[in-house]
Amino acid sequence: MTQAAPLPARPLTVAAVQATPVPGDVAGNAARAAGLVARAGDARVVVLPELYLPAYHLPALAADPAGTDVPAAPDGSVADPRLDPLRAVAHDHRTTVVVGAAVRHPDGRRTISALVVDPTGAVHAGYDKQQLWSGERELFEAGRRGATLLIDDWRFGLGICYDGCFPEHGRAAADDGAHGYLCPSGYLAGSAHRRDLYYAARALDNTMFVVFANCVDGADPWRFNGGAAVYDPEGRPLARGADTGEDVLVATLDPAALAATRAAHTMLGDRLPGQGLPRVVLRG
Image 1 (cartoon, rainbow, N blue to C red):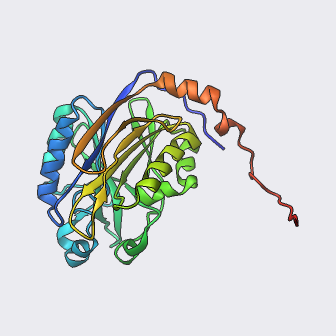
Image 2: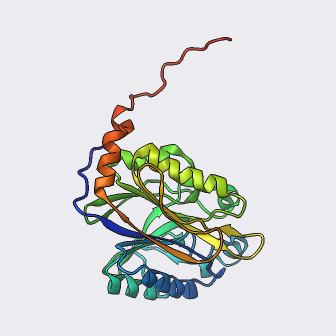
Image 3: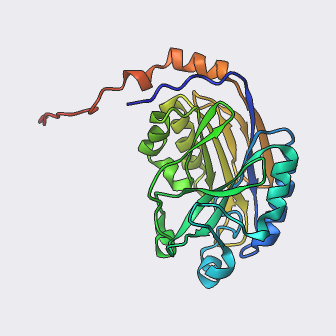
């Protein structure tokens, strides 16, 4: 059942980024990511797209795993010097950055991951994608656990792209007391209907904010459709990007809106244990 968590005491400013990284250029993409974080101003959390550091380009990821992977230590920390620009901007702006990467773990596993760069500049492999999509399964292993990120007194579940297509994934975050759900993603051109539906639904399903970052543009056949957004707890966009073009979408999450929505829409508390079971079969 859902773990009740106290509401945050103060609003929190966040940013969702849509951008076009260069396939295989981890160092260059980290430097470009630092510039995007700086554009977010005083945002306390900045979310960049799925696999942003090596770029979501499966042929490039298959051709050069050593060059496109970021190595993680046994404790999950990441010391890769290519990420120094992100460390510096997180420290200088006192912000937390969530950015997509391909991570190589000490046991040899390769995962699609969300790195968390904290305001001290420390980097951790925070979450490994659990729901792999299509050709990702040929290159990566699925994550083994969920993750909740604490920012001041806010709680955020972490999800990556296809994770957000599964209501259970967002609900697991809500069950852990999440006030929001951070989703680095890589939605391909032609998927705008599903892109806009899934994350608004996860927000309303769980009466929590959703911060959705996405890749945009790129070279055929890996063209992405932007639409980065921040959704309120009823699934309404507080900010949304266009289908093309780089952008940094900044919005403020208001705990009063969270409280009002949860008072009016009490699905989390009303949910029955073993929802829908037992079942009877009817014939028409």
